[in-house]
Each structure stands twice: as structure tokens, then as C-alpha cells.
Length: 163
Image (cartoon, helix red, strand yellow):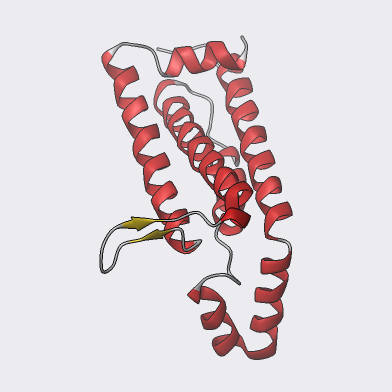
């Protein structure tokens, strides 16, 4: 079974498929908003505003891709957890944790100041490294999410007793 077949199985047009589509959409939207706020592209106060600087197009696209992949992976893992006897392993958290951590630029947000003031030189160094290598870290996060998607697909193929 290919990944497309696994996606059709999970996100079918049945009632349970609609619930998984809603879960994926909610997770993706939530993380898209979170990444937009942390990357200072989405502003909620004093008025709702969205702005993408010309040098942040790639960063925005990777954040959006990460949010969508995160929604799909989480929804598919919930499907595997509910409908098969195969144990849920590390794929739920492996790509998800690194993608969330790497998609929000710690050096570009107020989190950078928090790390620098809380942890001193070590926090400033970590913030500087995260800001400098933000794009490669995001690419690694997307790669891990693709690997997690492949892992869920393999798990669906191995599980015989799917409802």
C-alpha cells in the first residue's frame, strides 16, 4: 500500500474519516498560527495583522509545510492508535518535536531574550546558533516529518487487524 492509499484509508469520506480530517486541520491551523506569531508574521494586538517580509518567504513556506505535515502525521498516528493492534512508537513525537522546536526562530522572537537572560552566555550562544541555522533546522524538521509519515504508512501496512 502506498502513502496515497494510506491517506485515503485514514481520510476517507466516512464519518470517522471526517473526524480525522478535522483533527488534521485543527492541528495544522493551530501550529500555523503559533509559528506565525513566533516568527513575527502574525500579530494579534492591537489589530489582527499578517505580514511576510520579502526575506522571509522561504521561512514562511517551511513553517506552513511543517504545520500541514504535523497535522497529517498526528491524525494518522491517532488513526493507527485507535484502529490497530500495532503499538504506537516514536514516529508520533520524533518529527513533531524537532519540527516544532526548529520552526520557531528562537533568535528572532522574544524567546531569544528569555534564553539569554535566564541562561546567560549559554542561552545567548544557543539563541545565536538557532538563529543562524534556522533554515537547515527547519529542513531537518520537515525531513523528520516525512520520515514519520513513511513510518506511519509502514505501520498501517504491517497491521492486519484494521477495523
